[in-house]
Length: 221
Image 1: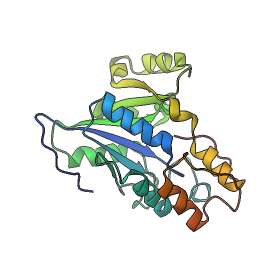
Image 2 (image 1 turned 180 degrees about the vertical axis):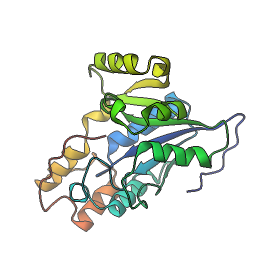
Image 3 (image 1 turned 90 degrees about the horizontal axis):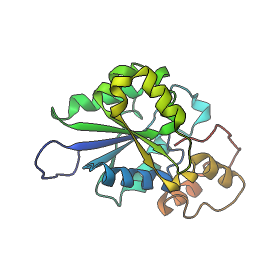
């Protein structure tokens, strides 16, 4: 996964955006671009999950389809790239393993920013090796305007008071869109135009994704 060449003084700032991306949609792209600009990221690397630890194979579209759709969605942005690191794994993908992977592959001093949903941060104490995780990277916790964040401060403040500064909030209006909503619309024969990039929309149509049955597995970023 080579990154485009960039000339800049000082260390790189790299955003890592993990997710099922089933399918990727405009909310993901707006989030990544806003994070890139607000946190001065040089690149955002999209990391489609191979087999998420909390889901079975039957609950998600095959990883190769999701990888291709993600690649189609980001190809017009020179600051976005897609990694196969989790797609090619045969075992469940844990965030700490992915962060360790990228830490070992970037030069010392590179700043890693992990972009995820604020709701996921509420469950961070259940993540594998979460204290090490917060030491290895800065978290960008994405939420939509008006989303109550009292519990976020309460939970992170009690568990990790010295690491609370490693978690930054980012409000994104477009997060009203979700992958679940798109799958529902496809299953019902409704349009998804402008909810996801056109190449992704066409890929879903070509391969008949999400049409056979309605899968209600909850909203996810």
